[in-house]
Amino acid sequence: MPVNVVVTYNSRTGNTRRAAELIAGASTMAGASDVVVFPVERANEFFHELAEADLVFVGTWTDGLILFGHRPGGTAKIKSLPKLWNKRVAAFATYAVNPGNISDKFAALLERHGATVTTSAALHRRRLEDEVTDFVADSLSSI
Image (tube, rainbow, N blue to C red; front, top):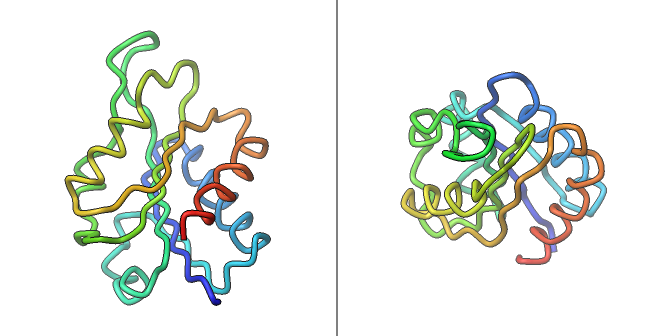
């Protein structure tokens, strides 16, 4: 069965963009038939792809202090995405030192935006290549 995947992201320093590109590549390697990647601010250009997606990966960066106060960064841009009503979504957030409970907070934000979050992950910016493969495999198995 063909699987359509969309990867959209909000990146401040380039780490989340890099994670999104790695997720797209891993999705293709895992057998996804159509994979599209774009920043969240261009979501309106990709409305058809979002509507047709079997799985949408949504990523952002971790904001907050090193040891506490972790929250999804750039939430205004994330909230500008079209509503993700009943879409299967895999949430990911990149971080540098300590992710805190960013995965839960970001998943909750996306669920308030209509998504059905099936998986979520905090991805360390220096270990993206190692962490993305398992995250993609887990996410695709939810379809």
